Image (cartoon, rainbow, N blue to C red; front, side, top):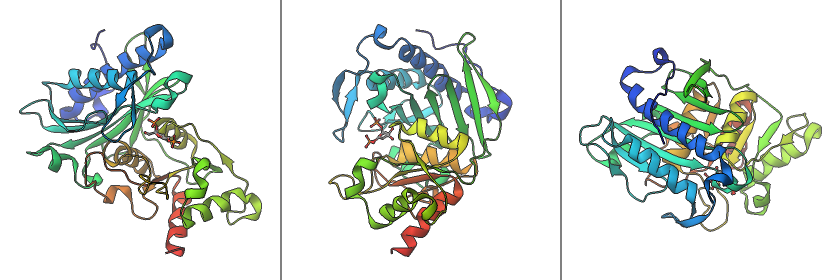
Length: 320
Ligand code: FDP
């Protein structure tokens, strides 16, 4: 497997971050290659273990984690924190960055040939791992994801807009297709796992009831629902054509703060969404104003079109 010959538009990327981003992209091309071979590459969705929080680990979760860690070792990343590993690892004594990663997001979709992804967040490294990652999400210097879908895309923000690249697999190049993505301010589409309805809080139930009421509800328009089950795929759809995504906290044990992780899922998704004119909150407070109290801490996530996210916030304020 090669991890060379990846090129992306260098003029839009901070020079110091370029080698790290290039290494991430090179691995993601290899991961995309493994995914594209599906069952021909072995049992990628086989359960091989459990991570610290009891989530199932699939073969591809572990494989992707090993590939990213190996490629970043000895480079500019001093601290490497992954969903698949309990503790952050020191991958270089002198590296200037701290990188948090969900190497393979949407693992329940591996064996059904539905889009999955990699999500990453980069901070300037501090002396220790905890202080590098457990800080306000607004201090990220880069956040983004790679979507392994019908096309492989890189979406990334360095705090100055959100860029989109599409992989040209023959050339092993990510080619810029959008310099400044914009989330439409509103939409008819909402995304939530409706099977959890009986566990929802009052404001979440009220908001979704409003969507379901269509023309007769508070928005005065018909709505449509989508739920892929891969955060990266939902984010990409919403960045492209608008909508709102909710993974709220609910009354199930262990779901008080929802399901998604602050450091390597919610923070980078919030960064790309806000940099594209959308909003990302925990229902009330912007995600970028929050900070995790543990590497694998969860946080409720509501993001998407600014107007729709605001309606969810209003509902929380009203029901407070
Ligand atoms: P998965 O566990 O399959 O990796 O990151 C967690 C995540 O997927 C998200 O990608 C997805 O949005 C969510 O979980 C789906 O959760 P539900 O199964 O509860 O709907």
